[in-house]
Length: 384
Image (tube, rainbow, N blue to C red):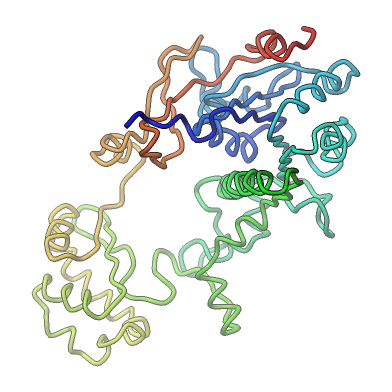
């Protein structure tokens, strides 16, 4: 069978966003074949100035703006706004992540653009949403993490609240925006008109906290920080081996029996303190002592191999370089190389889902500032 075209082939996205949450969302759409036109001011997206750099270009910018076309407009000028309006008339999707009220001042808000093109799906990404008592507040990722509750449950027991080691507030909002855009596109096919999507970073992270929220909303118990341990099951944690740390993940009695047998301590499974998952959680400190008595006598590699052979979920804890060079990332093509106009061959990390009917989706580099201005305006028959 002939491969299908990319899923979003023929869909045009007008991207007014900058920094991370919005650009991450639109990069996902570009990965799936959408024509993403990134509208930048004359000075460019702030992230163009971030380090590290390759060939004079920000590596950070190139990672999250892959596959897009860049045009440079002064949205504070009448000419720039007129061009933006003409582009919106010929687009399917608009994405912006200004603070609420800024898009209206620039003349590119939902009310203005949907009057020009009622079929627009328009996504607004902000820290706290388009309305509510905190909507006026600016929000970087760490603010979203702090205000969503996720920092309160992240970190070792007894520690201060910890930020998750990636910009999860921005990334979560970008993911939520991407799926919502596609849902709204489907609704547009049914109803004939687009709609305004209100995506808040805080809401997006909050909604991911299924385990913590199930504890609090149903029991009233406020979750705290417990390090790498699972709040309800044991042993499901990191454990010290002779040369590092590893993960053992056991969430039922059958697996626990296999674990104790693999460690040569089958009798532990019959101990009343460890006979059930709730009992193991209640006696977790004693159980850790027993397990680490075994893991500390083995290297990470040897212990993981023994447990994997017994069908027990276990793994090393890999560093970023180990993941990138490892067999899984290599086989799955998680990192690919594209040719950038000035930086040369550069790595990109496209969205990870395989669209098997479409084959391998093309990976494309990030644009130079304003690289496609004349090209886009000519295609749409707009004055350059």
